[in-house]
Image (cartoon, rainbow, N blue to C red; front, side, top):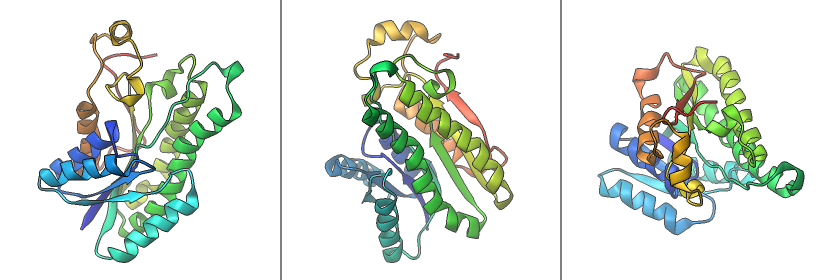
Length: 243
C-alpha cells in the first residue's frame, strides 16, 4: 500500500494537504505531529470520515534520532506499506528584526525547516530509490523567494530549502523521483492569524488571502502521476504577488 507522509499535519496547511491527498489518491496518510496529539487525531478523524485511512506519528523533525526511531518503528509494524509521497510541510516562524534577534530564534526556525527537511527526506528517500519511484514536495514560501523584512530567519530557512529542492531533484531524477516545492504567499493559517488581512490583501493583485485547500490542490497535483516530468520546480501560489 502506498503511503503519504505529511510533516506538521496536525493543523492548518498540513491538515488540508493530508486530507486532499487522501481524497484524490486514496493514499494511506501518515499524519506527523510534534506536540499536539489531539489536533493530529482530528486530522486523522477527518481523513477517516471521508473513507480514508492513516496513522498519527509523533516526532520533532529537527531531531534526527526522533525521526529515525519513530519511522523505523512504524515501518517495522507496517511492512506492507511504503512511503511514496513525502510532503515536508513542518515549519515555524519567530519573526523579529535581525539586529535584535535571539540566536535561539534563528536556530529554531532554520532547524525545523532545513534540518527537518534533511532528517525526514534522507530517511524516506532510501526506499524510494530502491523502488525507483517517489514524489517529494517541499512547502516553502514567498519569503524564501523575495525576502521579507522582519523574517530574515524564515526567509533564510525557506531559501535554503528552495536551493536544496533544485539540487536534490537533479540527484534523483534518473530514479523517477521528482522533487518540487510549493511557495505559498498569504494563506489563511495560524502563521497569518496575527496579520491585518485588510491591509495585507492590498499587496495581493487578487485582493485576498488564499485558502489552505487551494494550496492542497497544487500539492496533490504534484503528487500525481501526471507530473512525472516536472521536477526541480518552485511553484508559486500567491494570487499574483511576486518580488
